[in-house]
Image 1 (cartoon, rainbow, N blue to C red):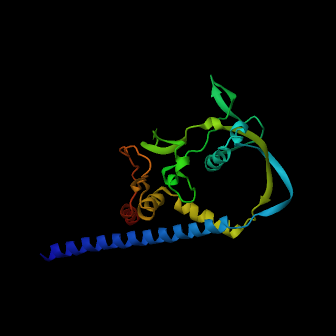
Image 2 (image 1 turned 60 degrees about the vertical axis):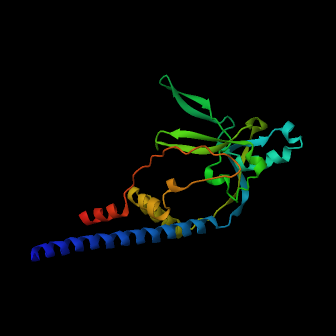
Amino acid sequence: MENDNLLFSRLRSLRSRKRIIKKDVEKQIRKKYKRSRELWETRRKIPLVPLEKPYQKGFVRFFVVRDDVKRTKDGEFFEEILAKINTYMYSETRKFFKKKRKFGRKIYVPRDQKLGRLLPYQWNDPKLVLTIREKQYFLKREEYDPLRKKYDTYYEFIEPWRFTLQVKPYMITHYKPLNSDLEKEIDELDSYLNQDKIKGIIYKKINGGLGKLRYEDEKIDLIESRKYFHYKKMSATEFADYFMDE
């Protein structure tokens, strides 16, 4: 009987140790994750400084509203839509080519550029301010991602012919001062937080798992969600077991 009680107390002690390590690991990750977000925000708010002599760095290609569409009564309306889905592509030359291997040799082919897609979280985002009329020009689609083994939902603009591509020199007019201490700390935190085991804990414990989010719009009928597969990450308990094994 005494031996059974001793064994039970030892098992209980082992569970307690694992539980303590688990909480300490999660606490440390949360602290580092919060600090990383603060540093990224600090870097973002560093004001840009104008250059004395602006210089050209290749070319930039983007969409503009066609002249015939711009002259119509809806010209301004489509300019507002374009501002929310425009994309920008950069190249060293005006040709915007990319290398591609064909029949064992490398050739240059034109780089394709499309309008941006809206993700579900952007559909009702108050920052994007997508009006009811603007939403009528988008179609909801699903596309299967074989790598993640899941369907991705997005909203696509149904009248891309209203826009055309334009190429202009890409001018560098400002720069952001570099803070070496800030960059060093950001790199150290990123190196820690980007580990697979750490990312799994952040995904489950801090972000709550993106797969649990649901998006709904009363004005538009949504298609039924399909079965989603998720990549299994290491939990905090498994992570604690890993440290115990060490």
